[in-house]
Amino acid sequence: MDYTHHGQKRVKPSAEIEKFRKEKEATKIKEYKNLVASCFQKRDKKEFDKDALALTTKILSQNPDFYSIWNFRRLILLEGILKECSEEDTRKTLSTELDFLQEIFQLNRKSYWIFNHRRWCLETMQNPDWNMELQLIGKFLEIDARNFHAWGYRRYVTSKLSHATETSLIQIEFDFTTTKINQNFSNYSAWHQRSKLLPLLIKEKNLNEQEKKKLIDKEFELVKAAFYTDPDDQSAWLYHWWLVNGQDSTISMSLSEKSKESSSILNQDLSIITSERIELLQHEISMVRELLELEPNSKWCLQTLANLLIELKRISETNIEENSKIDDEVITICDRLIKIDKFRTKRFEDLRSKIISAKSLVKPVSQELE
Amino acid sequence: MSTSEKPTHLLVDLHVKYIQSLDTKKDDLEYWLTEHLRLSGVYWGLTALDLLNNIDALNKEDVVKYVVSCQHDNGSGFGGHVGHDPHLMYTLYAIQILVIEDALDAINVDKVVEYVASRQDRATGAFTGDEWGEIDTRFSYCAISCLSLLKRLDAVDVSKAVEFLMLCKNFDGGFGSSPGAESHAAQIFCCVGALAIVNSLHLVDADLLGWWLCERQLKNGGLNGRPEKLEDVRYN
Image 1: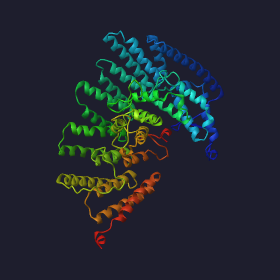
Image 2: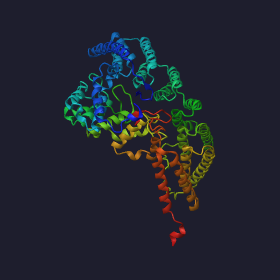
Image 3: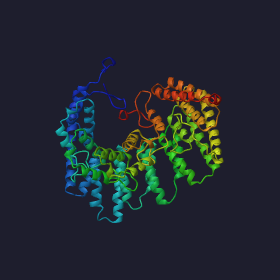
Image 4: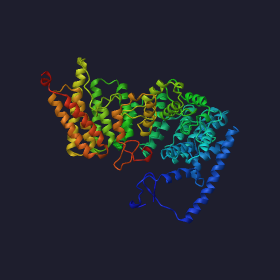
C-alpha cells in the first residue's frame, strides 16, 4: 500500500484501467511536448506575437510553475503586443492578463510565479486598482487563512495602496488581524502580522505611556482568551512571550539562565521601568498559575511559567532566599516537562542542570566572608 | 505492507535503483510537467546517492554534460533544464553538482561569479532570483552558498547581504522570505545557512529560535514548517 505525503491511502488500479490511462497519458504528453516545442521555437526566433501569447496561455494553464514560459510571456507583451499600444489598449490588455491570472489561481493559489506575474502586470499598468487586489487577496485568506503567499501579497498590496492614496492602513490591517484571530485563535500568520503592526500602530498614533499600556493590556487580554480556548495552541503563547519582552524583536528570550545584567547604572528611569516590568511579570505569573490549575498538564503553560519565573529572577533585586525558591520551582517545572513532553526532554534537562549548577555557585554572603 | 514485513534496515540497493529509475519515467505526463525541476532533481538524486556511498550510480560524464547544457547561452547563470531561463536557484544547484563531481573546470567560473554578483541590489543587500526582480531570502542563500563554494564571496557586499537577512528576522526568532514575512522552517534554513557561511551566527537569537524550531515536531513525530500546520517530510 502506497501513501501520499499527507497520509492518504493510494489504491492500485486494475490492469485494464492502467492501460487506458497510459494511452490517454501518451496523447497528453505528445500534445504538451508539441506545445512547449512550438513555444520555444517562437522564443528563439523572437516572435513576440499573439500566436506566441496563445501558446504560453495553453502551457501555463496546465503548468503554472513553468517559469521560463512566464518570462517569455512578459517579453511577448513588452516587446510585441504592448509596444505600439495606446494607453487605453495597454490597460485593456493588462486587464485581460489579470483575468487570466485569476483563472490560473483557481488551479494554484500557492505559486510564486503566478504572484510574480500579477505584480508585474500591476506595476506595468497606469493607476492599477489596488483596492480590487485587496478584495481578491481577502478572498484568498478566507479560503486558506494560512496561505503565506497570500499574506505576503497582502502586505505588498497594502503598501502600494497606502502609497497611492497617501493614507495609512496600519489600523485597518491591525483590525484585519483581530478579525482573523477571532475567527481562529491558531492562525499564527495573523499573530505574526500583528507583531509587525503593533509597534507601527504605537508609533503612528504617537501614544503616551498610559495609552500604550492600555493597548498592550488589551493584547494580553486577547492572548489570555486564546489560552483559555486551547491551552495547547502554540500561536498565542509565542506571541505572549514577545509581548512580555516588550515587543522588541531584538530582545532575546531567557529559557536559558542568564547572568544578571551588571546594572550599577540604576538611574531613576531604569528603576521605574524595572518596577513596572516586575509588576507585569508577576501579573502574568499569576495568570498562568490560574490556568495551570485548570490545565495541570499543559506544556505551554508550564514552559511559559518557567520562562516568566527565570525572567523575574533575572531582573529583580530579590534576596537569596527568594531566588532559591524560584530556582526550586523552575526545577520542579522542568521535572514535570520532562515527563510530559517526551520529544524535548533534553531541552528541559539542559535548563534544569543549568539552574542547579548556578545554584550551587551561590553561597550565602556570611559564608563567603568566613 | 503489514507491520511484520517492515524492513529493519535501509534497503540501499533499492534506493539506488529507484533514483536511477527517475529519469526513465517518460510515460508519465508528470515527468514532462516537472522539466523545470530537472536540474534540482539531479542534485537531490546525486546527494542521496552520495549519502548511500553510491555516487557512481549516475555516470559522472553524463551528469556534468547535462549540467553544462543547462547553462544559459551567454555563459552566465543556469536554468532548470536545457533551454530554460537562468535563475540563481538553479545556478546554485549546478555549482553544487559540479563541486560534488569535482568538475568545476567544465565551466567558466568567472562568468558565473559575475552573474551571481549582478543579482545583488547593492543598496539593500538583497538578491533577486533573476532579471525579473523577485526578492527572497532563498536567493540570498543561493548567492552566498554558491559564491562560497566558488571561494569568491569577495564579489558581493557581504555585510549588506547580512543586513538584509536581519531585516527578515521576526518576533519568534525565525526568518521570513522578505522583511515582514512570516517565519518558515525552509526560509530559516536559508537565512541561518547564509549567516553561518559568512560567520554571522552571533546575530541569530539561538535560544528563541531553537525553541521555535524544536516545536516544529508534532505528536506523531513528523515535522511541520510553521506552527499549527500539518507535518510534511520536506521539513525533515
